[in-house]
Length: 248
Ligand SMILES: NC(=O)c1ccc[n+]([C@@H]2O[C@H](COP(=O)([O-])OP(=O)(O)OC[C@H]3O[C@@H](n4cnc5c(N)ncnc54)[C@H](O)[C@@H]3O)[C@@H](O)[C@H]2O)c1
Image (cartoon, rainbow, N blue to C red; front, side, top):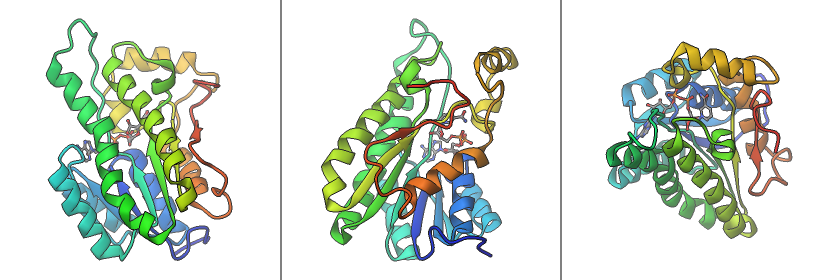
């Protein structure tokens, strides 16, 4: 049951919706009255997550594959009728020095973390433009601003997402579609759990807040950007719930 109604009557597609941040955003949107579809490469996990948070359904998507993106967006449109809010939260992160990184590792990261944002947006946007309204929220990263050791591929992709967001925002704001990014700091999700403990200990020390965030602490920023009137004046913004990691 909804406890508040900032997104009452709205529909949302959350890509990467089986993951820590995507699922938390989905849960917050459902809680605010939205009808939500979760899409993820792991379709079964998306279905389980959808059931858990009270979303309409979960669908399979591989954001790096255009055919898969087309099918998933069509499935979401069938389930929701239209898509008012798109959240691009799918992502992968591996670690390597540039000297040791082969082209396959570089290309996979760019394909999922950057080209994936383009592909999903490209296939959702026409419906938003035709209706003269929409919100697109891209989950970038503070590392796209400050860089990160052994993460050149990931940081390049995330910096690309920020540039893509700002450029698309300029293109479509007048048509009623608002495009913004969120750049979280380290958040306790499976992506960060996979990183070695030593790195995490050092990173916590570096943060003014002294701790990593929780997915539920990122979700309210995504509610703000999606809501009316709270999100109405954000065009190409890059909001940073990041424990103080970057203060641009
Ligand atoms: N956790 C953090 O510290 C942090 C910080 C900044 C930014 N981010 C970004 O937030 C987003 C969500 O990450 P998370 O922390 O929730 O991690 P997560 O690993 O929990 O979630 C990522 C989700 O993306 C899905 N995914 C991976 N490749 C995919 C593909 N090709 N097609 C479709 N789905 C795919 C995974 O199955 C997973 O469910 C990512 O873009 C990540 O880069 C995370």
